Length: 231
Image 1 (tube, one colour):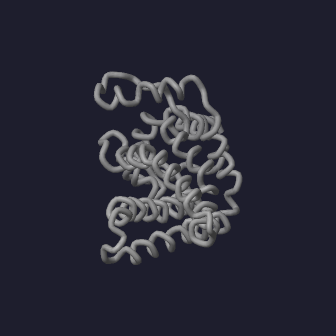
Image 2 (cartoon, rainbow, N blue to C red; image 1 turned 90 degrees about the vertical axis):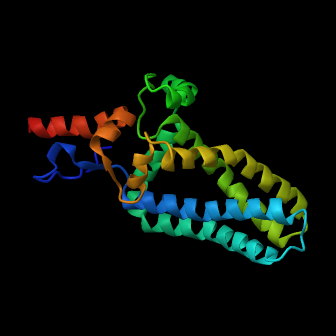
Image 3 (cartoon, rainbow, N blue to C red; image 1 turned 90 degrees about the horizontal axis):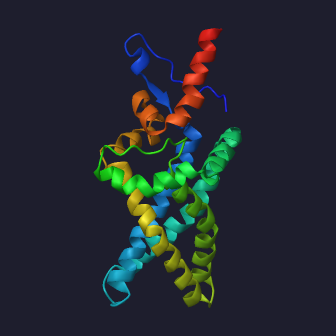
C-alpha cells in the first residue's frame, strides 16, 4: 500500500517524530471488538466461578444481563465501525491478508518470543505490520467471532442451551491465553507496551516501530521517503 501513512514532521521533532500506525477506522474497529469482548469475558468468568456453584448468590442477574448486553454490543458496534470506516476497506483487507499470510520468519519469531522476553540479547526475526502473536490473535478472533454470536443467541433464545454453552465456554477457554498474552504485551511488557498509545492516538514512535516492525517500517516509510527524496 502506498497510502499517506507518514505523520508530517514539525520543526521541533523532525526525524524523531511519531508516525501513523493505525488509522481511525482501524482503531474504531479494534475497540468496538475489544471493549465488549473483554466485558463478556470478565462477566463470564464471574458467572462461572462465583455463580455456577451457588446460583442463589446476590447480583447474579445483574452480571448475567451485563454479559448479554455486551454480547449484543459485540455484534452491533463492529458493524457500526465497519460501516463508518467503509472508505478504508482496502486497508482492512490488507490487514486481513497480513494476518493470514505466514512465513518461516513468523514461526521462528513465535518460537523465540518467550525466550527473547527474558534474554534481551536474542534477536527476533523481522516482522511486518503484525508480529506472529498478533497474527494468531487476529486469526482466532476471525474464526470464532461468528460462533460466539451464534452460540450466545442459542443459549439465550433456544432449548439447546447446554450444548451451545459448552461450545461457548470452550472457545472462551481457548481464547484465554491470547487475551492474557495480548494484555500483557500491551500493558506490562516494557518493550511492547509503548505501542498501546498507537491504538489510542494512531501514532507511535518512529524508532520503536522501526525496531519492532522493521519490514513494515521499510515498506511504508523508508521506501516512501526515499522515493520522495529522489523527486
